[in-house]
Length: 264
Image (cartoon, rainbow, N blue to C red; front, side, top):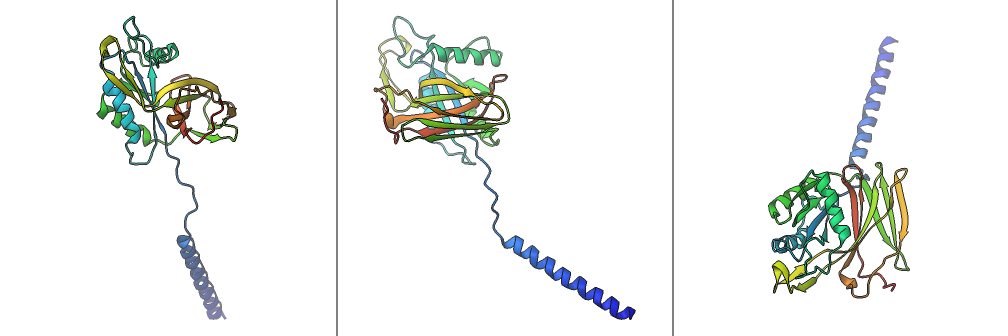
């Protein structure tokens, strides 16, 4: 009787092992349905001026950075902020704004600098350096691109030309909107660049705070304010999320506006 009991137990264990092995093969053969990891969009801000003779190389670099592929597929989003403190009776930068100069002054305090300067590049609100240093720019972009985003940002065009902006973030932060324009050129008639024709990419045309992340989320429909002399096919809308305490950019997204209807 004892021998039969032992045999039955042995057979049961054998059948159980076979079942476990078959189950393991089935799981291994089933393709993974886990979503791919989100890619980080890297915000590259350049503070520049048409009145600054050392700025054109940085302006050119800004245009190249968006076109260069990153190893992990992260998107590089350039923002060209033209400051106004280079303006003089000899030349006025037609793209400048005192608000852009104020933004750079805030960065100067954040980074404990003596003051603003051009050309200055700031990447994801965390690292600053001379804006014409191509090697440094690519190094910092690669480091930032390797990090997962801390906020999700989506921009959805609406049928009336508005944009639906949705953000998810565990940290409280400001939601910022920028409109940029590519393929711009100016024949300079005064100042340090007198006589030169300067070419610009990702010139910030409009920049504003559209809201605040609360309880981990933000959602709003944003009406665009596009001027008639802006070339629609060269416009992009950029939304990014930035903390107030240290200026760190948590996430970003961009959208080409060329396919959207003109609303004014």
